[in-house]
Length: 217
Image (cartoon, rainbow, N blue to C red; front, side, top):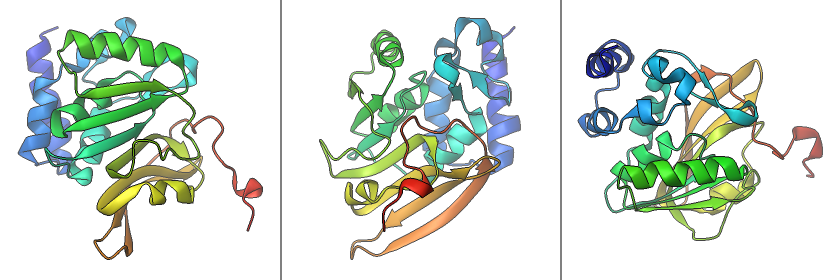
């Protein structure tokens, strides 16, 4: 397989046709080798329009979904990001290319350890990786300019909103299978809120996520 041609095809045939046109995002995708972050057994499928299985029942979302989330997050070079769900470390690497600093958390030590090695291999050092359960929020090191939650949540715990700076953006996959939506939540400088539905998907729910039946009014 011609890796570089496959990368170009991914960008032109998947990303651009899905209206991912932000050149900063496209450059990050172009210069961050996805094939080095997927499990070895799936290296030849690194650029395919498919979900790639990870350990512990987790998965990498499709390349076009990754890029669409990044474009919607609209990161600036001076911003600090919280990522909940390190997974393969690929999204972490992309976030680090676009932002000043990234705090990335995963409940599985294996993911944290593997991501540490991969990020170091690619000289990405503006990331702190932590093994922790952040399904119900993570206020340490906050507030943040942007938050991205890469596992699904039945609904968004209020603590995540509390960790977002005025002017900040948050992306989460909200809902329950088979109805989940990638959702962009913005907090304006006056602390008002807006939401935008980006696309439908179905991905694994974060372990220990609050369930609607357990929510106390």
